[in-house]
Amino acid sequence: MSEPASGVIHDIGYRHYDGPRLGSWYATRALFVYSLRAAFGFGRTARAKIMPFGLATVMLLPAVVSIAMMALLKERGMPYPGFFVYMQAILSIFVASQSPALVAPDLRHRVLPLYLSRPVGVPQYAGAKLAAMTLAVFLVIGVPLTLVYAGELLIDLEGPPQTGEYLAALTTGLCLALLLSAFGLTIASLTPRRGLGVASVIAVYLLLLAVSGVLVGTFESIGSGTAAAWSYLINPFFLLDAVRVALFGGESASGQYPDGPGPVLLTAALVALGVAALFLRYRKAAAK
Amino acid sequence: MHILETEELTKHFPGVTALDRLTVAAGSGVTGLVGANGAGKSTLIKILLGLQPPTSGRARVLDLDPATDGARIRTLVGYMPEHDCLPPEVSATELVVHLARMSGLPKVAARERAADVLRHVGLLEERYRPIGGYSTGMKQRVKLAQALVHDPRLVFLDEPTNGLDPRGREEMLTLIRRIGTEFGISVLVTSHLLGELERICDHVVVIDAGRLLRSSAITEFTQATQSLTVEVEEGADALVARLTELGQSVSVQGRLLTVKMLGPETYDAVRDAVAGLELCLIRLEQGRHRIEDVFREPLGEEVAGV
Image 1 (cartoon, each protein chain N blue to C red):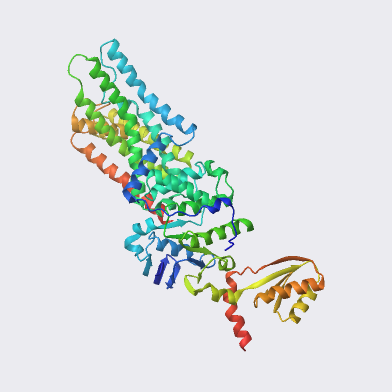
Image 2: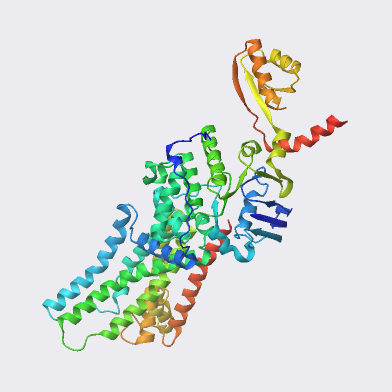
């Protein structure tokens, strides 16, 4: 009859939840949106927004200049196809700084078990992170391209709008985003410390850039054209530019790429490798 | 109905046998799983959640098989890990809302449930601050809240009193008892201290090196192991003599006297003896049994029987 009161806050009884439980697919989508927001620093401190927004703004500058040129000088500025090749340094920094933001905290603070003890499994977790990072990189590439295309339609230049080039650049941009995200996230997830993750991703990019440049120079100087053409593909940005040339035709943004389906097959193999590496990395982290 | 049961459950890791043909069952209410560090408690929980496959044997949780129905089990069960698992830069509210959605709750329901459950575990204004600034006790409460936020039918609490001071420990144990009774959620709680579980559990399972040592209702346990710890400023020897005179069995451990509980009259005997000798009583508490007592107990009876 006289139950001891254990404090005012505890007197409100426990209520059960009998609403819907939406399951794994819903949870994965929610994690995807959460991670996409995190890639741009939403839901984090103001400091976390500086890098992604700064870099996204820099990515927009060529588009703004291009639109201004079209409006004032009536001539085309930035070409669609070469856009991500010219902006490769900025894109690399974006991938390097934001990949750890998506994966490092959960590994470093061992939050992963809280996900895995829910309907979210390893494939769902890794898949949501990969999809979020891919879309983030794709937005950074695609929004400036789309702005220029919109500008082109509105300003009405001589000749037909370059719809084909625009769509080709968007498609290869999406493939590039997937490739960069898979490797960026894998590398970042191997180094739970955030700063180290940023440095590792940047280091890998600089290494590929340097190796590609040195090999191209060497092979060209000794007159080995085929070897030089393949050496371009060590740099992921040139690789995807080569994919665009192979699939949609058009000008190369740098030198001569290898003919045939080589670049396309190589890209497909690398994407498969990167995604597999990411999933295996998380399978191992889950077993701990 | 059994909330969980295992049959000949075995788990080998390279070089280690974590579980060795373990057969246990637990009903609704609060079940304690007691064992020294490395006895296989955390491994058992991971197998029951379907996160690790057993080497051999069977397990059932809420009448589901973790090996095939792991995903379904994980929507109905909550899990509080032993280790730190909280990101420091988000607030308790943000984290618990997010994890509620990871359990499949719609956005609005996730917010309501998170607010409810954080209140139940006793986190008030501080729940809006980043977790990085929390005390150990508050962090344990957040870990408990995330395990309860989706209103599971069963929760696995792995060493929930770890790192808490005596008061925090008491509050956590009281909370766990309320989860099992008032909230109507079955609890499997692990600890390496039998003494702290005997107050809140209906049933206790003791394992050692992956093997079952004992599984019984709490009433059988407490009768076998209950004792009183008494500390007085001086005059301990006289107190031992007086208590023995009054028919109590007393053993001396340094400054502390351990008096075997024979019933409520043991309290009276200690009170009368201390008052009669006019001693300064510093401490009078229920004995804290460590897991070793369970090993010692049958041995003592054997000796007595000889």
